[in-house]
Amino acid sequence: MTALSRDEVAHVAALARLDLDEAALDHFTDHLSSVLDYAAEIDSLDLSDIPPMVHPLPLRNVFRRDAVGGVVDREAVLAQAPDQDGERFRIPPILGEK
Image (cartoon, rainbow, N blue to C red; front, side, top):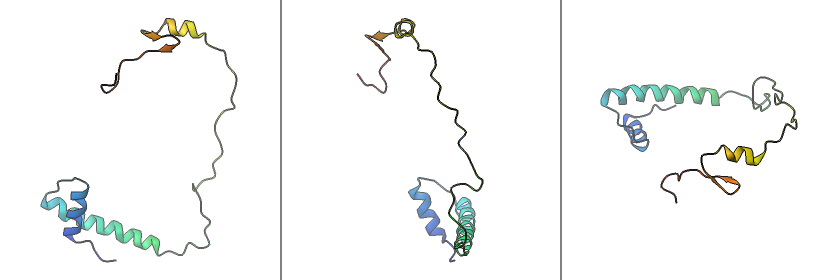
């Protein structure tokens, strides 16, 4: 694979709104070229006999079964709220909303 140029890394840094100094540009030019070379090496592997998978280990559902629990009295809960509006909690405005 062709190595990244310093100008390409500077362009990507500008798109990401990163302010890199000269030493950082040199460092990331070499580093990102190595990463892209490794990605190209992985991409060149023949994986046709390997089935697609979501996870390398077999997983099973670890959720518990739903169980009906006790019902909480609405009036008792609302009585503990600092502010309420009828049958609902009233909260302070967020981000200047009214």
